[in-house]
Length: 127
View 1 (cartoon, rainbow, N blue to C red):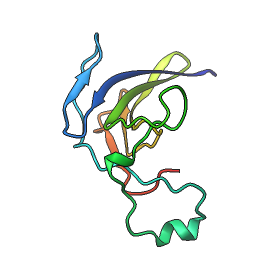
View 2: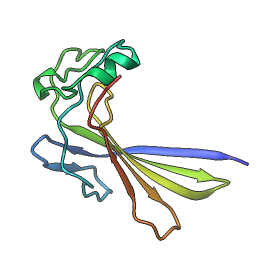
View 3: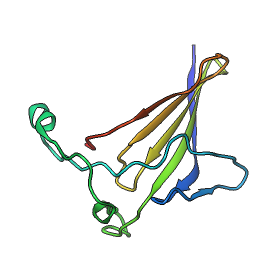
């Protein structure tokens, strides 16, 4: 039995909802862009549950490392990941990330099933 995954960035979504799609791809967002999630650093689980405001402003979303460290980038990058089991496509997953790696939106697209995609929108916590 073999499991393989293939992923590619297909789009960038600005905080205003403007979508820039990569060449050779088509993409339409599944939801409106949510507010960015707050970074919780090393809070323990009870501390996380006690938090009330778990989003932050786009001004706080900074590249964490590398040559562009500290640069503010507002919006989400959309990665489409395909999962193959024994060479057959089993699922596609749409993952939205900001430049810190925080994931507020994940959409599951079951392959070969007549079910609609399942969309999860996080309302809190970026670890």
